[in-house]
Image 1 (cartoon, helix red, strand yellow):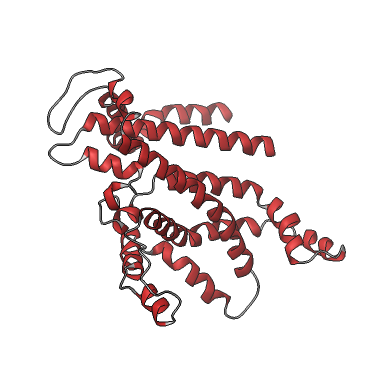
Image 2 (cartoon, rainbow, N blue to C red):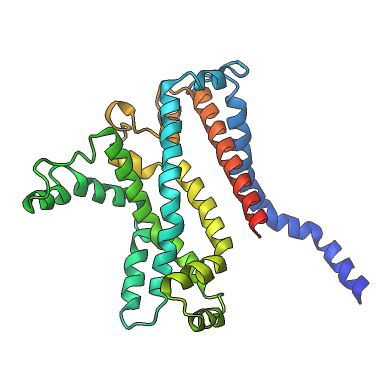
Length: 297
């Protein structure tokens, strides 16, 4: 019986591979080939529609002498440092709040998740209008006499960057909240009951029961949000209207890749080198976080 089944699988092997061919072709054309070609281009001085010649590590050496790249690297690193802690903690707090039984809890779940289904470009445009010097936020604060002059959310070097960070956090809260809600459902209620018998309040139950119970999920979200923060593009692009802020000081890694790799005078080889550096940084971050997770387990 087993031999007949094994023979059947072997005979159907070529046919099953034929069904996989379309997916493999798409994978090669849109993932494997672009990835390999980007690495190849990073060692050339190619420009848009103008094939270049090999220049070795010249592009990589130029990167670390380029003030625009160093600024973009600093901004992307700040994005990770400032955004990731909020992405790890705030969605967990929201998930704990919305898992409580209430007649109106469905409304709050929908409200928190609503930004996730919205386009990042639309969200960026909404917040750009709200944060403008003549926008709703400044108008309300001035009418309440909280401030006398408009706050330059979109024209100050640091305020623009932190405004984009705020939009990123607001945009991702609902998505990570759903992931935490799934993890919270796996925590045994007897642990909370035992904590109550020991006199633990809400805060202690959160610290000593909830957080250890979702530790692996916290590490997953830390990894996902770190990668997303390093690859952020839409929010900062819309808020700065594609300019990277005043003097390009708020540019990020992905924006720099877009500026260097598009247009008639695009330096595709240089942009490819930036892409490879970004890939290495994200890869190292992922490996380090996985090692931390395994050691914690």
